Length: 83
Image 1 (cartoon, one colour):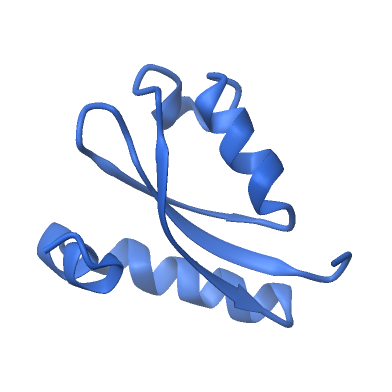
Image 2 (cartoon, rainbow, N blue to C red):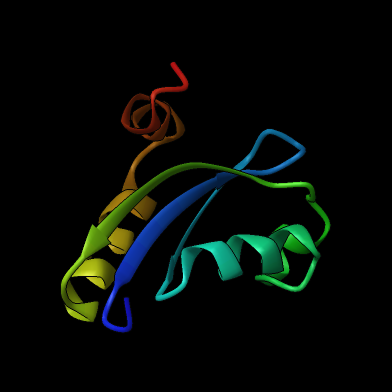
């Protein structure tokens, strides 16, 4: 979908969680896995997609990304079902 906006949570190889935004989830996860994604994930591959939410607008997705980033580790684990 050309107008798909996705917020996602990755679990990195070191056990940390990374939250991001994209319009192409498969491509973005592959970039992170190849060490070509965000600086944060480059040294923490491989990564595994744990959670994602789809939105109709970029602004809604960006707002949700911000909300998730404000959560504690425990709250994120509850959100993605790791707990």
